[in-house]
Amino acid sequence: MRRRLLALLCVSASLLTGCGAVPGIGGSDRQTVTVWLMKDSASRDFLDRFTEDFERDHPDLDLDIRIQEWTGIGGKVQTALEGDGEDGPDVIEVGNTQVPRYVDGNRLLDLTLESVAKWDKDEWLPGLADPGQRRFHQYGIPWYAANRVVIYRKDLFEQAAITAPPRTREEWLTATEKLNSGGNQGIYLAGQDWYTLAGFIWDEGGDLATEDSGRWEGSLDTPAALRGMDFYQRLHSLGAGPADADEEHPPQAGVFAAGKVAQIIAVPGLARAVVQQNPDLDGKLGYFPVPGKVAAKPGAVFIGGSDLVVPRNTDQREGAVAVVAALAGAEWNTDLARTMNYVPNKAKLASAVAGEEGVAAMAAGAAQGRATPSTPEWAAVEADNPIKTYMTKVLGGADPAAEAGRASRKITETLTVSAG
Image (cartoon, rainbow, N blue to C red; front, top):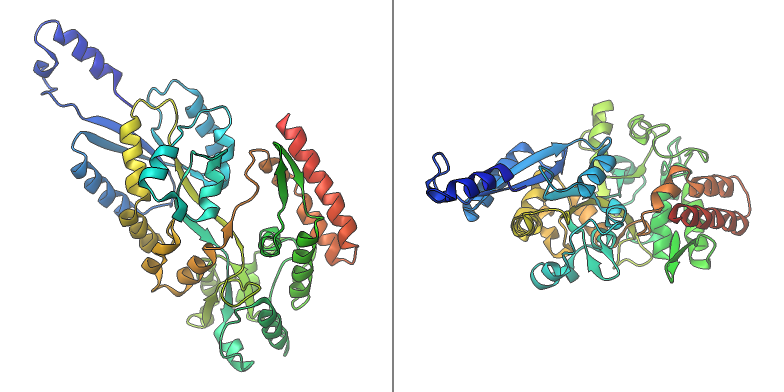
């Protein structure tokens, strides 16, 4: 933020000699743009290179990049947005699905004109761009993405005479069934992996919840959503994943590392944890996008990542917008993707990570990426997630339509109550 002490010095000094003559100031008009970025989103080397380049291109600006912890960040951001702007951030990195929470209260700068005119808005990954939008106004600018792929055992595929990764759902089921033999699980898929389920639902044209005239309602009971759950059941049956737990209970990296699983669905980075636990798997792991209904189009996936926002209370609007433009622009966005093994914010930039097998698979899937329903109340649904309960009951033999109806009503109730 602009240093008000400097402004006061200038006003006082101008009565005698003019601001440019104040000792120690030397006529400098440099302003400081404060940027909050999250821990581990970017390497120190990347930030140093970016800062040097940005300040060289903007001789009137200094960057003050402050690294934040994810734990407790929601409350810290809200406090910053509600303050008077003094010593607060001018640019903030936030999780893509958290942008709707911060849009409420009219505390973010509307960046629609900048995004449309300068930043090729129509080319952004929808899973990053859509949560940053409210009623056709853009508040969150896509920065980077990550999403799930299929991590598989190349040696087990070879033993099963599977010569290439499957590209369609039906091919995937056939291959997984062949792999589900000899004491191996064709796939380890936990029963409550609702992010993966969401992708299958989106592939069918359904959604977790839909909006009509400002009112959100659960939609797991639509025919399209039920088809997505049916495919999940078929895939889940080809392994021994627990019906009553998610992918973290137990952590699926440990299950995969035990050596009796042919596939898991996870972000590519999880492979490092697998190899750390079982070095014998080093060099034996491969990656492919979650297959879709047709070979030409990978399956839909939940896309996580970060957007960049500018608080309305900033007094460094031009500088803040310049920082966002640089970080989200092609040069530094592809640099970040290569440095951190992320997906760039536009599908056309995916070639920047083509040399990394896992990231390339992730980028292919990201083109079909989606985010959770774009309402700030969705966090309340996840806090006591009825989708998990629904999945467990269906995998246990309950009627899918009846259970989907119950879960949808619970989602509607939660979204309505949370909205007040």
